[in-house]
Length: 73
Image 1 (tube, rainbow, N blue to C red):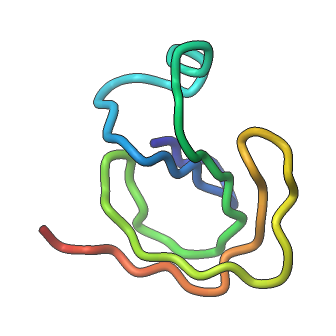
Image 2: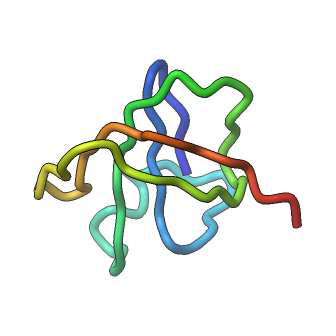
């Protein structure tokens, strides 16, 4: 959903041209910020990811990405 320096926000549904702040009060579902060094990630992409270590239980959750792969549709 959002790509920031060193991290990405992943949500279950695709929201085009929306930010987390715009949908967070109405959004129902999983959301996680992943810290990553992976380049070329863009909002709206489908990805596969694996977590390294534990997950912080905040909302959205927070974790370090062990692996991220872009899924070509």
